[in-house]
Image 1 (cartoon, rainbow, N blue to C red):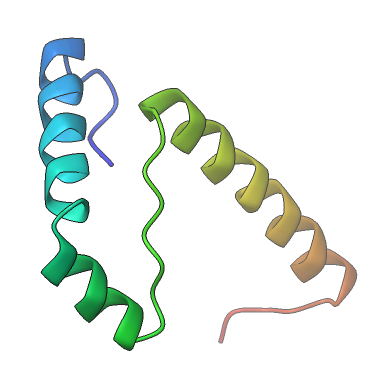
Image 2 (cartoon, rainbow, N blue to C red):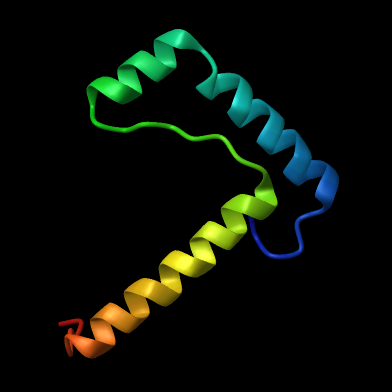
Length: 69
């Protein structure tokens, strides 16, 4: 994630480095041992995923009348 308006070259650099890190077998193994299964996708795919998840959980919390204390 990055602040809105972050220049595309910066987004691309962050994406490249994250993919590189998550491709390291030691990092993947440690992540998977803790129950995390890293998935690399494009910045656009990630943005779409986050939006869909926010919409889904907004609907769930509204229907369940969940309130923040």
